[in-house]
Length: 469
Image (cartoon, rainbow, N blue to C red; front, side):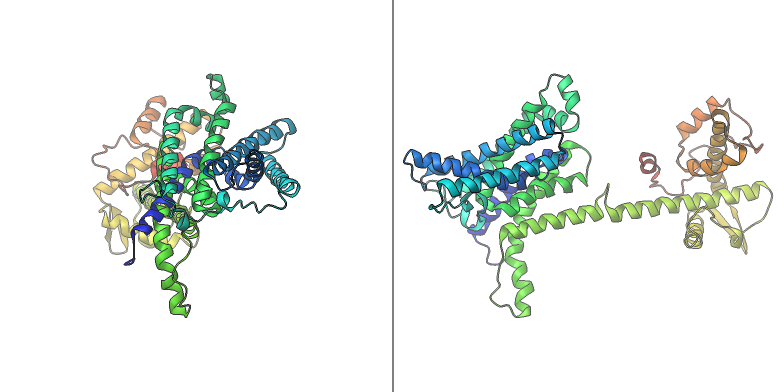
């Protein structure tokens, strides 16, 4: 990184802007379950490129002129729209599944492009790399006018602005057609028109990005940032912003990694000639790393986070179960011994561990006090346990009134629900049941406990998350 130059800045900015411009339409493609459209377009642009080349040659155009180059881009965009139209037609008329229809169309169009080359341009070296497999390291060498600003950076930056404006102007239409096209049609929105508009925007963005940063990075940033953002949030606006930020970071971090990581890894192994790597490839790898981190540690759906959240909830339930056991023992005027406390509803091999940890936690919170081999609830612990038992017995009474269940089928569901009933719901149950004094088994239902005196076992309770689940 000590050798970072202005050229590296231009490369990183170009890669970041190209990735960000692709992330915007990519978000809607992922939501519409059309994630592989980018890969399909990389094949279906071939007949468009060939047709544009033949059109320019028919009018005596120079294949290296800016006009001919623009025609190649236009031909690629038209091919993208044709791909969308044919895929939709095959899906609707043929009753073919979406991904299968796309696979049929893009392989057929790719084969048609090869046939055109064979028939009309077999003796011509038609290099599609200028559109499909560009390298960001060389793309920045072509500057705009008399400035040092790369043309590729201006092109992708302009597309980023255009895509942002289009999303802002058509956000309602894009959101409705992505989640509920039938509702959008009933409100006067034409889903087919929105679809073709999105595909036109996607095709133009992808073809420009193909030329700047290459196929590998484009296909990656079309899908991975949006997929990563969806692991972090359920709000579309947050997902859009997050996907753009993730894509931009991938561009910068990818270029920095392409400079640092190869020399750090390979030179100690004796490969002294390896000093850097492809920016596009490394940026694609960084996107994969971001996705892996979100998959493991995402706040909402992260695998590790979900495991920890479930363990935390299980631990809270274990603590409350111990309070309920002690309350019922004291209610029956029985001495409570620590060795006799058992959590039967937990996994057999975890129950002793949870019991010890739960008892330690309750003691630390001042809810349980020990006297030799016995233990008892403190006044605060008694209030907390009383509220829990009240929830249990009110729910048993509710089920007994509204469901035809035998008495021995009431305890198990109540033992689960009791941990997630808040004060408002308990008050509603109490009013609906006409303030019952006893549960279906004849046991006394504790009176209302003041929330100010009852201390929760865990102030960061996961009850809300459990109710959502």
